[in-house]
Image (cartoon, rainbow, N blue to C red; front, side, top):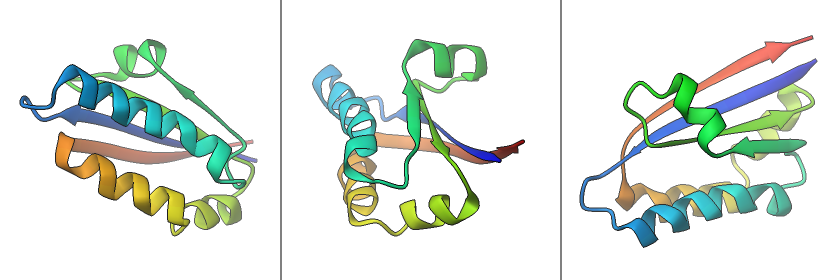
Length: 99
């Protein structure tokens, strides 16, 4: 079983291109900081088909719900949330479980 943890986000209008890129780069770096993340996919291919007004997205893959639950309270994840919050206007988060 694999868990797809999908996060789509919309930046605040005042977020600069540099701030937006920094948020995207920080999200991509989480895979190297949190061992529970099996892999991740980010970029145009993630949010364009699903977009609905969102600016960016990332799909985190976990081998189990246990690993997903290790990720959520991890310090690097919490730090990322605190760092990105001032630049993000809206987020859509959902999980899909596949066999």
